[in-house]
Length: 411
Image: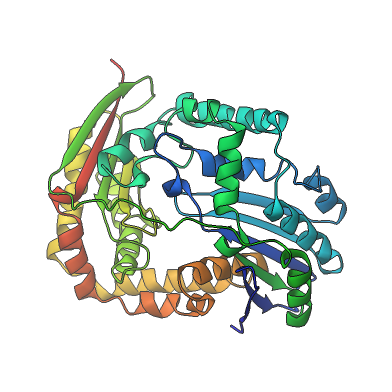
């Protein structure tokens, strides 16, 4: 993939890939700030800003209307590591996109009224997702079980409603000017736009934004887990549920790709091991899944499922452990491994046909290394061997690395 790059004098990094096969352009901005950068007593701010950034900026009171009138669409998402904003727009109206994104990087339309509106939206989302939905508080239970000092111990939405309810306008402003800076962001532009035009528009609209004092990240390092941790809760839910989380490496470590493949071997598709053996054959689970958190720092390998009617949660957990033991002691079949690798490669190839996916991926890889790393993902997965998978399973699926949540129906 041909990738162009340019760094503005204010520190904003620009990456670009031209795709003449579409009449659209995508802009994706990654800000290097997530829930892990929050104060433990003031959580949920990164997610709050995901909403505040759509509430108007210093010169543009309404973000959505100009974009929609130009034929564009937009959205955003936040996790523990980053905040990501993206939009798509017809190529002939692309300058509108640069104008909109640059103005809200410059400064938001901070006001008590705007804060109250977005605070209400976020608090309602917290209630719907975490308080009024079955199993909605799993993240608030499992994360602090697995993490004792690292800020991954709270979900992106925040620890409690009080942290957002009590956020002041001054605190919100400080958070913005600390992190939403050109020198803390990466702009990826893809689609039907030339490299010279991209540089011209980026310099015109983003160039005047002053760089800011972004604090050095100095997060507490989570000590090695040396014991199995367990928690049982009872809630008004329809079914018992099992949640298991093993400590694993971070996103940029070599074994990350092995963990990802192991999660696919266990639960990607009907023929995956957990689905085939525990759902279809033994009928111990009505549903089960395995996935990795994908965190930049040391993450979690999740296994979650709902036992079938009449099956105790203890029996269900024992069956999962038995499947993990097989991965420790028996090498994965070569054909099984090849099938998982082929599926990943096809997903990558088809995913990168879409100009918006390319923009999102380029911004991410530029943040974590170099944008060109987008072309190295498939070879890295291809390089994982059966021996590496067995070694990673033996170390990663040790009882001392496990946190277990039994989520039971209230009796």
